[in-house]
Image (cartoon, rainbow, N blue to C red; front, side, top):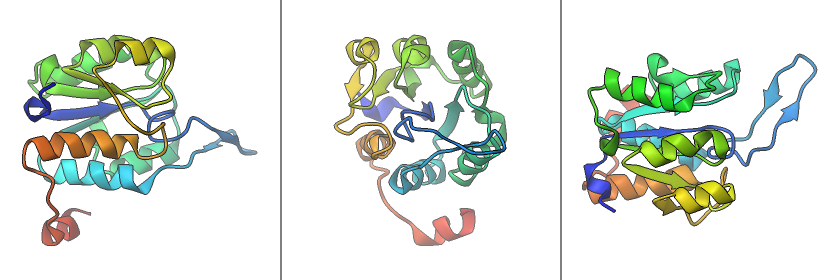
Length: 173
């Protein structure tokens, strides 16, 4: 698996950046808990020029705001995404990327077509059996416990980009 060829990192939210749990609130909003290390890794990838994209079936202001704070541009946040492969193809087209230059992290059945289409399809350790079987890379940790950080760090290290520049970080975030 050649992580150095990856130019873009795309991912699902629930079950990848979270453990999949949702707390229902009174006003039809759900509370999710994100891992800060995942977010830091995504910001670092954005600083290094990697395109970031999110394909999620959910649609909440909280998730939208969190993705923006991680460096995902507005136009690359696909919410209420039911056909994730169409979103993936649109993302690739708009960024002039070939599918094999894009990594995708997903955890459940709706992610399967994208995991298969991406250059590297990665999954958390607790992904559904179908995704575990189809994945190119299985993270050592479950969703919500740093799996996005693990895979982003692998990509950036392979390209010699896993470095921290505080001046750049302060200007962007």
